[in-house]
Length: 448
Image (cartoon, rainbow, N blue to C red; front, side, top):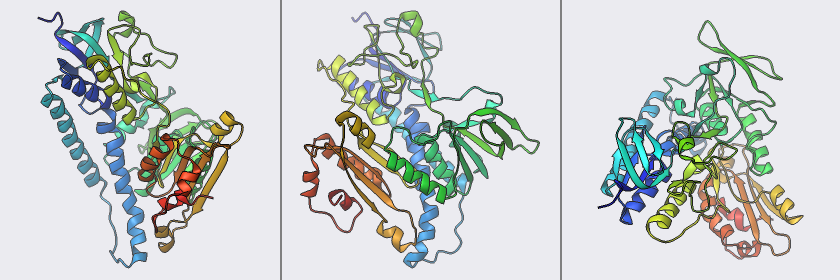
């Protein structure tokens, strides 16, 4: 008879926690999971998945307009936000059920309540029930950060954006990262007057400068406004229910909705970390070693709560590595180099590897190859948006250090291209590959 109720108790059933729990159970472990909200986590319930569905919906605004140039007469198009919202939320309900079913089919016991760590091997549920486990895994993810100022309660975060009763006529989005730019594109295509407010003078910090500049140009052309070097002073509610936003370096403005996209913070509060000695880093995230172990030998952590790379596929890799290390006797680490990413803006950005500035800093110089073109569909549709592809190479060997692109379907293209970059292929390898014509992706093997 084991001295513990479970071999593994996971707190949090997001992408990382579900993968870790399912695989650990497949390795023969007795596993339980506690989730206080819904199985699936941020990505499935209130993040990547519903956002991508909204992105699809938003694209129809331009597609329907472009269709006229391809011979289609569809009459006056009408958009129903409530129908899209409800269809998205219904599909999220379906996915939530599938994720929970996956755990249960693998013999994982699920507790639909909050859990607190009350000892190195002890978990106390909100019901008061106490459970013990040989190993505890924290996978509680992160949440939107809301800056502190007078009237902050009048704004919403991305969590609430999926549940709006109607599309606001005027939206102020605070932040310059991928969430801000994605929702700016979504709301703009749905007919809202969108303003992005950012405390710095640039968007998408960390992405290649040429991609950032191109998105800014296109966004301005689409009617999205920007207020740079601006920070909140206060928000007041007007008599008609609208909001007056006061900010530094700019005049006040009236809007109908303020959306905070000002970063995310790890969900560590109320877990009992301090009481059991789990250390956090200077960002407030749980500190772990290369095998996802915390400062307490029996407690591990994966995903956004560790604030390494806040991407769903990374959390899944960490969950898999944890399970293989702890319950399969196969020590496994995650390679955080050359991780591809995408911004589902309008148009989208995709990136893998070093930016030009990073390569120059690392190697002293680099070779840059680009293609600046108008996609065929845009040409026929009389749409002037241009795509931009950029390859960064090591100056001596020609090894591809980074690929960056903005344009239709860039996220789909970067996935396969990332394999080549990860494998260490050179510009000559790309040049030696025959193009698929006519496609946008052929530009990758025709870069000059």
